[in-house]
Length: 519
Ligand SMILES: Cc1ncc(COP(=O)(O)O)c(C=O)c1O
Image (cartoon, rainbow, N blue to C red):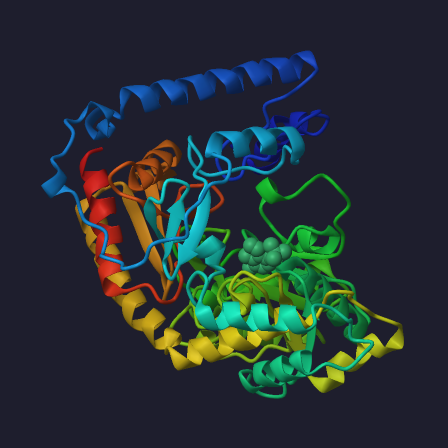
C-alpha cells in the first residue's frame, strides 16, 4: 500500500477511540472496549469477538504448545524447590484476600489493577521473599517494581525509619535538620562530574516533572525529546514525555518530540546506535527551532519491557543535544541504585555524564522518595521564583535513603547484582535455546527481560502465553512472583531485590523451564 492510503487507514482505525466514554487503558494487553456510536458498537463487537476467541484459545490450549491444565499433575519430587529460608513471618489475623478485594472495589479508584486471576494478599516480607495471609512464601522476582533494592524490611532501613519517626517525623525544610543534609551529601558523593546539588521529591514522576522544568528554565526553550516506548511518569508534563499510548490520556501534552526507539530487538536499525541518533538530529532540525530544552531517557527502559539502548546511541545523542543548546536528563528511576550491577547508575554503562539525573523507587527501598541531582549552575534557575515541596526531603524518608546507600555498600549489593544477574541471564538464555516461544533475553544485572513471542520470525507478541506462564509460576506448588510489561505486555520483567541469590536464580529458571515445558 502506498504511503497516504496506508496512513489514512491507520487513522480511521484509531479515530473511533477518541469519543469513547470509558476507554480502558490496555496496559499492554487489551484495547478500547466501550463505545457509543454504531461504528463504535460494531468495533466493540469485533473486539469482544476477538477477546472471546482469545479466551477460547486460552481454554483449549495452543495446538502443539497446549497449556498445562490438561497435563498430568507432577509428583512432588519433580517440582523445583524454593531455596530454604529460616524465617517465620509475624502471625496475621487481618482480613482475607476476598474481603480486601471487595473493599478495594467499593472504595478505591477503578483504575487500580492487580496481577493474577486470584490476586494475592501480601502481608509480610523478608529479604527476597514475601508471605501471604496463610504464611505461604513466595520468591519476589519483581521487587515491588524494581523498588526494593536492599531486600524487604531490611533491619538497618527499618530501624532508621523507626528511630527517626520516634524522634521527629516532619518539620519541612523551613527549619534545619541533619537528615536531609546528610543524605544529600552521601548522594552527591555517588555522582560523577559536577552533579552535586540535590532536590528531593516524593516520586519519580515529580522528579522528572522538575527536571524537565529545570531544563526549560535553564535553556529558555520548550522542546524536549524523549524516546518512543519510554515511561517517565503520569503527571501533565511527564505524560507528554512518556511515549506509549497505553499510558497516555487524551489531554494536552505539548512540547515533547518522540524519537525512534534504539531498540536492538524490534527497532528499525537493529543495534546500530548511531543511525537511531540521526533521528534525534532530524527532530531537532525539522521539528524544532534548532534549539531544544533537553533530552530525557532511561538507560534501560523498564516499563517498556527492559529495552537496552543500542550501543553508541547515548553518546551521539548527547552530542547533538548539547550542540542544540539542550540539557541531557538521565531517568534513573528504575536503573539506578546499583540495579544494573556493572555500574551504580545506568547511564555510566554508556560512557556519558548527564546534566540532570532523576531517581526514585530504589532510593528508599519502598519509602516514598525521589530526587533530582544537577550542577550548582543549573540548580540556580529555581531561585528565580519560590519553589517548595512540603514532603520533599522529609527526615524519615531521607534517613531511610541514607540507610539504603549504606546497606548497598556494606552488603556489596552492586557486586551481587552483577554476579547473580549475569548468572541468571546466562541461565535464561538457555531457555531461549530450548523454547521457540522465548524470543529475546536482555538486560543487565538484576534488571532483566525475557520476551515471549508466538512466532520468532514475525516477533508476534505472545500475550496470552505470558499470562499463563505468570499464573503457573505463582501457582500452588511454585510461588515465583515475576513482573510483566513491554508495549505489548509480553515481556517478563525480572527486577528482584538485589540480595537475590544464585539459588534463587536457579529456582526461578527451573520453575519457568518447568512451566514452559508443559505448554
Ligand atoms: C523510568 C521511570 N521513570 C519515572 C517513573 C515514575 O515514577 P513514580 O511511579 O514514582 O511516579 C517510573 C515508574 O515506573 C519509571 O519506571
